[in-house]
Image (cartoon, rainbow, N blue to C red; front, side, top):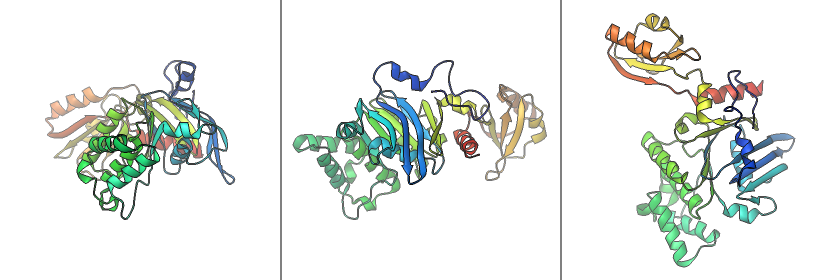
Length: 336
C-alpha cells in the first residue's frame, strides 16, 4: 500500500515494494479491506486496509484517540464494522466469527481485574471458555503460567497484583489456546524499565510462533521489537512502512546525544559540518542532543571535537530516530 507522504521527505515504501500487495502471494494471517466503523455520525475508522504475514511483529502506532483500540476491537470481533472485511487465518470475522476468534488472542488495554478471582481461577475460566478440559486444560494453564513466570502466583488474587503482573496475566490468557494472531493493546504502558526489558524478551519469543500486533502510544519502547510500523491518525492509516524507514523521517535520525559533568562548548558543536541544531535537555543538565542535517553523519566530527578538547563525557549515543516525533508530526498533518 502506498501511503501519501505527509512528512515531505521520502515515501513510506522501499522501491516498488508494498506491504499491502503481499496478499497476492500466499495466504495471510490477517487481511483487512476498506474497513470503516461509525459511532453515530462520527467515523472512528475510515477505509482502512492492510494485511499481516504469519510470524510478523507489527507496531500499531498513534496518539491517544487515534483509533488503535477501535481497530483492535474490530479485528477481535468485540465490535462489528460498518463496512469492509476482516479475515483472520482465512476466516471472515462476519461470516465465520467463531473460527476467526479461535485463531486470535487479545490482551485488552484495561487488563484484568476481579475482586476475588485468583490468577489460576482466571486462567481456568479462559480455558473453559476456549473449550479445554481435563489434562489438556491443566497442561495449558501450567504451560502459560510457567512461560509468563506466574507459577508461584497462581493462588494470588488478581487485585493484589502490580500493573506489570496483571499485564502478564492478560497476555497469558490471550496465548493460552496458542493463537496464530496475538493482539496487544498498550502492553508496555506503565512498565518499569526492568519489566519492559522482560516484556521485550517475551514478545520476541512469541513473534517466532505467531503474528503479533502491538498497539502503543510509546513507539520508541518498541523500536527494537517491530520490523514494520503502521501509523494511524484520526481513524486513518497514514503510514505502512518498515520501521527503520519511519525512524529515518525523524529529525533526530543520526542525532548524537551526549552528557558531560562540566558545561560543553555549544558553539563549537553547532559549527561542526552537518550540524542542523542543538537541543538542551532541561531535565538533565549537561545533556545535549546535536541534530544532523538530512544525509549527514556528524558522529565522527563530534568524536574528534571531544578528543581535541579533552571533554569528560559521561555518555555518548547515536540515535536511530525518535518514532514518537514522527507519529506526532503525522497526526498533526492529518488534523490540519
